[in-house]
Amino acid sequence: MTYILLAALAPVVVLLYYIYRKDEVQKEPVKELLKAFGLGSLSTFLSLCISTPLGILGFFPSEPSTLIGAAAVSFFGAAIPEEIAKFVLLWLFVRRNKFFDEHMDGIVYAAVVSLGFAALENVMYLFSSEDWVSTGITRALFSVPGHMFFGILMGYYYSLVRFDPVTPRINRFWVLGAPVLAHGIFDTILFSAGVLPEALSLVIMIAFLFFCNSLRKEASKRIRMHLVRDGVVVE
Image (cartoon, rainbow, N blue to C red):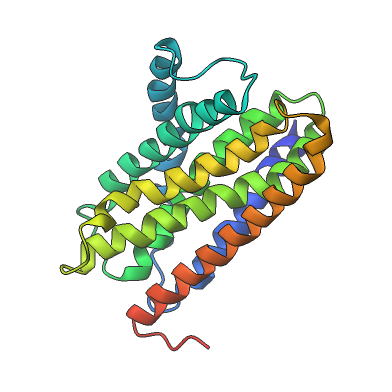
C-alpha cells in the first residue's frame, strides 16, 4: 500500500516543485499553496457531482463504441465537469486572497489546484488498478502533467481577466474554454484507441504524443508571457 501511495504522489510532488520554482518574482507562501492543493483535492468530489447527473441524463455513454461516443465521454464525462470543479475551487480561493497580486500567481494557484485534483485521482486509479506499476508510470508521464498543463492555461487567462482591464472579453470565455478544450482533446485521443481499428493504433499514439508535446510547449509559453508581464527578463 505504501509503494502504491508513493507511486501516485511522487509525480505530483515533482510537478509542484517545478511550478513553485517557476514563480520567480515573489513566491507564494507555502501555507497558501497547501490550501490550494487541498481545495484541488476536494474538486475531485465536486466534479463527480457534475458528471454523474450528466451521465444519467445521457450526455455520454458508459462504454463508448464510436469516436463520437469517445468524444462525449471525454468532454461531458471528464473535461467539462473536472475543469468546472477546479475553476470553482480556484475562484473561491483567490477571489479575496491578498497574495494573488501578480500575473504568474494565477498560473501557480491554478496549477496547484489542478495538481491537488490529479493527486487524489491518481491515488484512486492506482489503488483500483490490477497493474498499478504500469498504470502509475503511464499516468506519471501523461495524465498528471496533463492536469498541470490544463491548470496553467486556466490560470493564464484568469490572470488576464483579473489584472488587465482592457483584455478582450473573449478571455473570460477562455478561462474555462482553454482547459476544457485541451482536456477534452487529450482524453478523446486516448479513448479513441478503444473504438477505432487496431490498424490505426500507431497513428493514434503518434497523434497523442504530438498533442502532449504541443500542450507542454504552449504551457511553457504562457508561463514565459506572464513572467514578462511581471517584469522578469526571460531568455
